Length: 448
Image 1 (cartoon, helix red, strand yellow):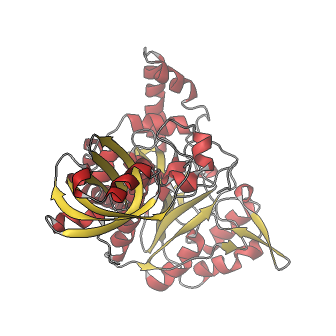
Image 2 (cartoon, one colour; image 1 turned 60 degrees about the vertical axis):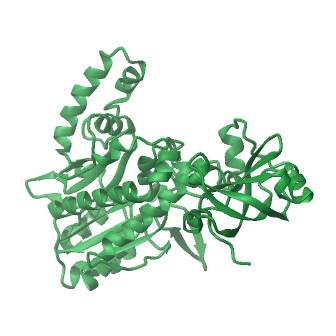
């Protein structure tokens, strides 16, 4: 049987079609039964008028339970009141698979219950909309880099060495050797950039961070471009262009999903280049002003935020409250660059104008999402990089292949990483990143 997708019903007005899906909702009024079906592409209301259908068909409409799978045949009618603007004048309905006592009812459920039933929660309209936005974000990512001459080069998930640091690694046995789940594909990206010039990798990454914040997952997806002969300024330009492109694509392609999510689309439409750029030093001054402003506010939330701003102190990495405060003051992402070298990874190049600072950048999204991109210019000197690896207490032997990149035709190069889940959280206005991936992995959650 060939079924018509609900999203394509507009092409079959006044024609008879068959659709297949799951019962989303139902209601009755006298001699009329309204059956709302979802098929993954949309919702469709099928209307059964008792005098026009077989008694068995009419009775079956009353017996259907939530999420029962069915096949429906009927005539497509234009109706602006119906979900999607079209409905079926039902002629026949057949049961495919029963659903008894579906656990997620229309009533309110707690987050813990919904997470335990994530495999079913995905069927809800909100979760469906969030993950469709995710799909468009991922497609936009690939289109952006593919159309600009980047080559996709897959990087290993199992690695023998750390990238971001040794304290957040998931360790596993690899035939008697220690191996780790990848924190980032960046080191391998640097090698492929020397072969292809402009590359990107896109895949899952793993961080064993003991963090239970709304911004963290232990497994998340990240896209990482790397470009040979590109400095920090070029890297920041690329990040701006990239973010603007992805946001624009979501606004263009996800109108229905953003409407379901009640997302204020005007906040996304204002995301246009150029983005504000603050040095770390300027960011510290900005945060000092915001801390005083929020402390004097009558808003309890701002007062609480003021207590946490700059809690790490000058010279440390920005904290969640710092990123929130910076984002709140702008209508588009902010690029904070040149952090203290002491808080950044060993591969970051020192700023020639002030070696105490690194040529790095974080892109901080507005609306409390925090950092969505982190990157910078890499150290291209063999001697300097060797000394940095030693000073960070990392085994030089494990990075022998990485040092070869500097040993044979080293060039200045830069790149960054963007976490898909935080980007989707920002696009959809979702509070916690656990809703932005089909099956989230958290400190206390590895099931389902």
